[in-house]
Image 1 (cartoon, one colour):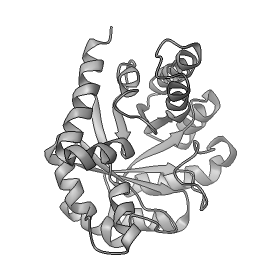
Image 2 (cartoon, rainbow, N blue to C red):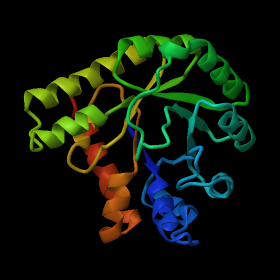
Image 3 (cartoon, helix red, strand yellow):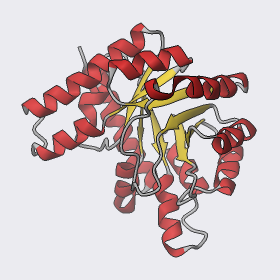
Image 4 (cartoon, rainbow, N blue to C red):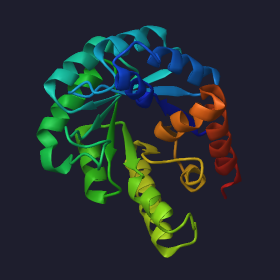
Length: 251
């Protein structure tokens, strides 16, 4: 059954706007869990622009569902992950000037280095995920370096959906969705788990949730935005209901 991982980074972003102590990301994780989240995602960036080290430590202690640590593929973050021991660590590209992650990790261009990082995390007992574009070359590289999970970047699909006026049948939308579907098939064929995420919201999520074999969707910004008006528990419930209904109705 498809699962929902809720990214709580933007709760910390709101806190950092005033450099104060609230809202508390740990409280957000509890509320998301009570709303039905199957996991909590946090991105500990090198510049600590939102989630910080103390947040990560407290979340590991308090979270009763799977904790997914998004992290750059650098030594500092690997050291932190090995100490923290989340259930899953997802390697992502990271740029200081980007607002959010802008593309998938180039595993094919740095296989040896990535393989060493994956091995170290795996030896610590952490399931390793990689955030990649819907590109066969990157999927094959992910398998070679030993990743157990591939999360396919759904940003291009979400952008097409928005640009085409939320028209699910627009050729550009269909084409981007097909790329994600084919990527999922390739991931599964290579023995890895197929997850997806980035820029998914309450309007575009159904088509991704209905794809064959997709195991988890990781969603943050849209849920936190809805929570401003509906509360976090309700926002999570609504998202998960949409995902589950779409997955159940899929042929």
